[in-house]
Structures are given as structure tokens and as C-alpha cells.
Length: 284
Image 1 (tube, helix red, strand yellow):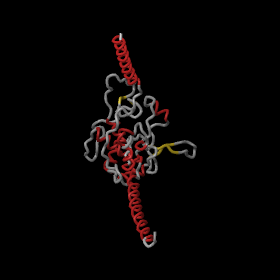
Image 2: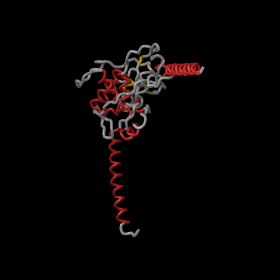
Image 3: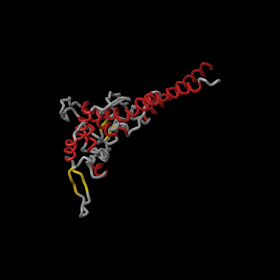
Image 4: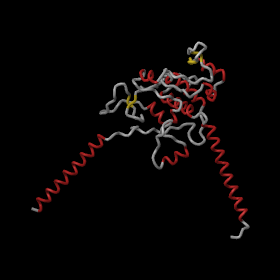
């Protein structure tokens, strides 16, 4: 009798374990996946770290990539043409570049709007008249403005890495995310359904696929300085340019921060020496 009862108990435990394993498997299958499916791979940028600086040659190539591959869909409404002088262009070159764009202005004396050639004080115009037109031209998705895109996302790494990020100023959702997204398009794995009109990209922060098709490819943009025109190079250059657009005063800010730290260290040392001198002759 005891043997029979033990057998029933063992059978019950086995069924419970099997049921628990099945429940866990079903829960894993039904669990909402965490995006992005692949974390950004760390990249080496000239502007990274507390002493980083921009590579003007790379920024000029990035501007070329933006104008030839991205500007047809994405605006940069907060970037003025005159700021391109920071990239190493002369005033005449900036004026010539701005004149290539048609800017809507007005109203004139008759109350009508009109278009004119751009001038350095103008901003990069939007390729669409309004968000509704942008959505209608892009499968219902409005392409985001690129002015601040490199600083717009607040994806942070977990403990303890985020502590170091405070000092190194690393942002997981910044340039590394943009670069990995641009080069991360791939065929959807078996069992993953992608909605029509979207493209699988495991680096996308809001889902498994996005409405933007792969925007870059090898030899898409010809560089004037002879740099190899690979997909990875296009992605790196335009990412660096977008970082500059989001934070054009990065170099000055870092220099100021370093000077402030040096001042604080010297000031702290002087305060300590003064305190020792003042209190050295005081009886305790």
C-alpha cells in the first residue's frame, strides 16, 4: 500500500513539474519582447570621452551623405546654414550651398507667400509641407526631424555601467544606436512575421521592424576626398554629422568643463592650505 501511495505521489510531482515547464514555455512565447532585440555595439568616435573633438573631414562627408541620402525624407529644421562654417566651409561656400535650396518666405506686399533662394541665416527646409504629407509619402510614418536625433533618446545601460557613463558621457541611444540601426538591416529570422511595408532591424528601439527601408548602401555617395564609399563608412560619417547637429558646441563645452575642474582642484587646495595656516596656531 505504501509503495502504491509513493508511486502516486511521484507521478503527481512529475506531472506538476511537466506542467510548470510547459507553462513557463508558453509564458516565454507570449511574453512581450524587449526592444531593441540587439544592443548597440560600442563604436570608437573621435568626439567621445571628456576630451573628444570632431573630425571636420568626417563631418563634411556626413553632410554630403545627409543631403544625398537622407534629406529627401528627413528635415533639419533647427540647423542654420551659417553654422556649417564650423565644419570648415568658407562664407562663400556656405552661401552657395544655401542658394541651392528654395525657401518659402512672405507674405509680400500683396499678401502672398513666395519662394526664394536660401541664404546663410535660413534653416534646412523640410522636404514636406506638413506632417500629413510626410506620413502619406512614407507608409503612414512621419520621418523624424534630424536636428536633435543624436541626443533625443534616453536609453541607458544598467548598473554599474551607467555610473561610468556619467563621466564618459556615453549615451546608448545616441551615435552608437544610430550607426547600428543604419547598418543593422537583415532578413527576418524564421518564425518572425514582419508587417508589409516594414523592414526587419533588430537594433530598432520601438519594435522588430520599421517603416524606413535601408537608406544606405555601398558606393551610394561618392566622396571627394577619396574615402572608401562603403555602407559602414556612410553610416559612420552621417552619424557623426548628426551628433554635431545635435551638439555643435560640444568641443567648447568640454574645454570649459575641463577648465572648471582644474579651477575647483586648485581652489580646493588653496582653501585647505589656508585652513591649515589659520588654525595651525590655535590651541585645540
